[in-house]
Length: 234
Image 1 (cartoon, rainbow, N blue to C red):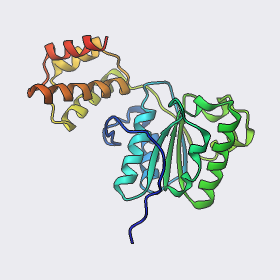
Image 2: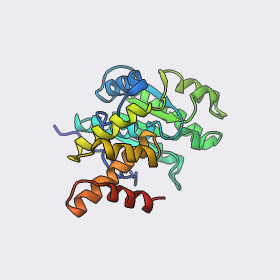
Image 3: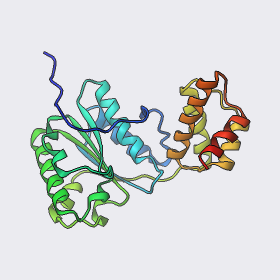
């Protein structure tokens, strides 16, 4: 019997389809392994990610949902920093198998949001569902007014994502390009590393733009193409 899909009013679309395989673990291998298990219905039911912008929190949350959906589980990604969201959005999300909630720090100190998150956590636990949450800081350092919510967010492991080394960033560029059928030789990689931000999120976003330009122009990337793309987003 086919499982009905909950009718959720979540007007949030992923700009691309990030995958767990595309995320180069570097120093974050333990965190990626835990998220992979969670997305596959194994391991810890509650996992918290923290880290500076650009370390890949959003990528991992979105990729976990896509991995779960590919396995016929029901999962959804919800970034709380999206303007216009209301706490009532969390009603009935316990019907899903996995919820990935990003930017929890965006609603810290908001009594209504904290109460809604606390209620959702309890309902997820009662139903045996899974939660992947993320913020810039770990739960104990968030400006939460509801002590019980802070306690709930600490029930599972918390992983702080670390930045990649330059060598890992170069590997990320080459691997992501290969996944998209792009030829990104050493000279192009060096050019990107010299003129572009070196965090994983920025690099993966650039690879997406390179891919789009290559498809549009029906050719492999070149230095002039990279120079133009970087100038357009300067």
